Image (tube, rainbow, N blue to C red):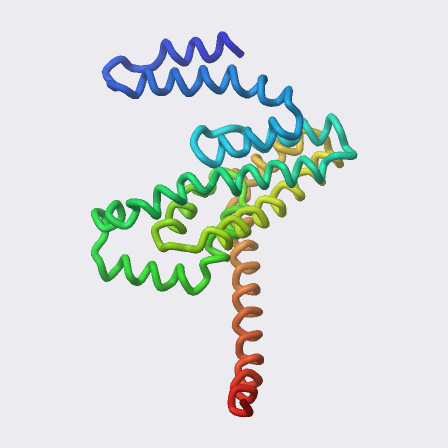
Length: 232
C-alpha cells in the first residue's frame, strides 16, 4: 500500500503549484489515519464517517463492510455509528454553504435562476438531502449538502435527512455483506457502473411515489383542517 502511494506522489506534476503538496498531505494522512481509527472500533468508524462527510474522502463502504463482516451481531451498531458520523460531518459543508454559498452561486448564475432553484428546493428540502444520502458514489453528495446550507435548511431536519438516508444505504450494504461477504461492495460498484441508468430510473420512480404520497396526504388533510378552523 505504501509503495503504491509513493508512486502516486512521484507522478504528480510539479507545475501544479499547491496541488502536489496538498495531495501528498491528504494521501499520507489517509494512509496513517485509516488503520489507526479502525482500531478504535465503533468510535473509530464514526470518526471515519465524520471525516469523509466533512473534508477528506474515505472509502466508507469498504470500512463498514469490514466491520460488519468481522462482527455480524453488531452490524446495526456500525450502521448507526457511521450514519451519525456522516450526519454530523455534513454540517461542515452545510455551514460553508450557509456562510457564503449564495455569493458563490450568484457568480455562476443570475438571480432569477437562483431564486427558481431556491423555490424548488424549499418545497421538498428534506427529500433533496435524504435521497442523495441514500445513493452510493459517484453521487455528488456534498453538492446537495452545500445547497442545503445555501438555501438555509434548518439544521435539525438536515441532520435527520442525512442520518435516515445513510441508515437506508448502509443497511442495504450490510445485508449484502452478510449474504455475500465483503465482496458485495464491488458488486454494488459494478452494478452502478454497468446499470447506473436503471438504478437512477428506479430512484426517480421512488421519489415520484414519495412526492405523490406527500401531495395526496396534504390534499386529504386540507379540507379537514379548513373545517376545524371554521368551527373554531
